[in-house]
Image 1 (cartoon, rainbow, N blue to C red):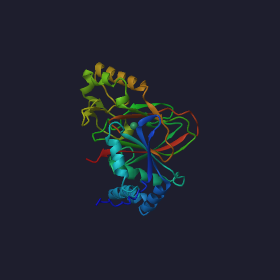
Image 2: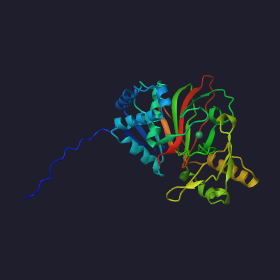
Image 3: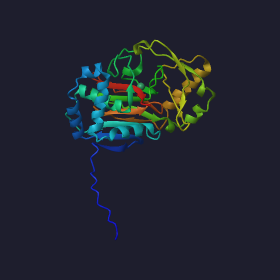
Image 4: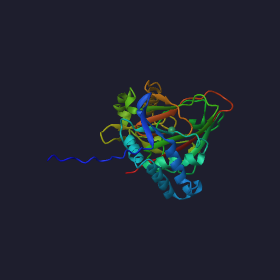
Length: 313
Ligand SMILES: [Fe+2]
C-alpha cells in the first residue's frame, strides 16, 4: 500500500511588510511596513509615553518586541540579516500610512523599535539622550556641517571621533517644509573605485588623531587608522570623516586630503530621497554617508532624528 502523505495546511501568514531592493542601488533594501502593521504597533505601544521610554531603558526593548510581534516575528531576523551581510548592509524602512506622518512621539517609538531589534543605541552627547533630534534651516551658525543647509556634507562614517563602537547609524526624517535638494548620499566602500589604492597605501594602517568641535560635547581625542578593522572574511572596514581628522604631518595630511577628494568624485555614490517618517539604517563601517546641498529657501525646514549604536554580540 502506498503511504499517502497527509496534506498539511500551511498557514501563509502575511509578514506585515514588503521587501525589495532600491532601484538605483540593489545593495540597499527597502522595507515598507503595511498600514495594518503600523496601526497594530501604534496600538500596542500607546500604553508607554515618551517620558517613560526615556526614563526606563527596558521599555525600549519592550517596544522593539512589539514591532517584531506585529510582523509575525520575522522582522528582527530580516533586519539583522541585511545588516550583517556585507553585500547589503543597509535598509530604508518606510510605511504605508498617512495618519502617523506628523506624530513625532510615534516616530521616536518606531525608530526605537528598529534600533533595539539590531543593537543598543549609544548615548548621544550632543542631545543628551539615546537619540538626537535636530533641525536643518536656511541659516545656521553651528560649528560643523551637520546643520548647514547650503553645503554638501561630504561622505563619512559616524563615530570616528568617539571611543565607543558605532556599528550602525539610523537616520530618520521626521518632517520637512520648503525643501528642494538635501538628499541623503550613500557609497558602499566596496563600490569605491579607488579603495584598493588607499587600502594598500603604507598609511592605511597608521593611527590618525581625530577630534571634534565643542558642539559635539566630546572632550577627548581618539586615534585609530582609517581602515581600523577587518570583517570576518578579512575585508576592510573603515572610519573616516573629513572634518574631524587631525593629521600630524604632511604625509598624513596629503593622504587624507586625497582620500576625501577620491570619495567625493566617486561615480558610485547615489542619492536617496527619504519620505517623512522613513529611516535609513546602515552598517556604519562599510557604508559612507553624506547629504547633498539644499536649494536656498527662507522657509526651509527639515527635522531629523538619529540613533547610533553597537550591534548585539
Ligand atoms: Fe553622519
